Length: 141
Image (cartoon, rainbow, N blue to C red; front, side, top):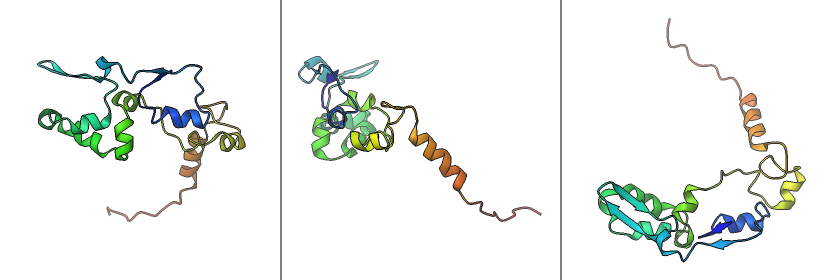
């Protein structure tokens, strides 16, 4: 499994959600940290950290929103490690999946890892069913 910043992969490995046989570091591949501005657009390497993007003055003219977004993610420590590629390929967040092994085992796992039930989908469906009916004021005669 490729590894650059590891801010999501390493906690997932710690919780045994992902158990790669081999890790391949991409961190020191210079071409994956490159920024190229051109007439047809900008190319950003997947291993650029969010801190790299937030601090680069070239983004202040044409890609200000990208620099602002990168600067507002998480904490400075995370921004120094988290990569653009990792954030774009981020696995869907789920409160049932993002737990330790023992917790997931206690609920008989989930569809995303070792189980057959999507607990999030079930909880969302039940939440809609349990909403009280609220009388709305009549807006017409």
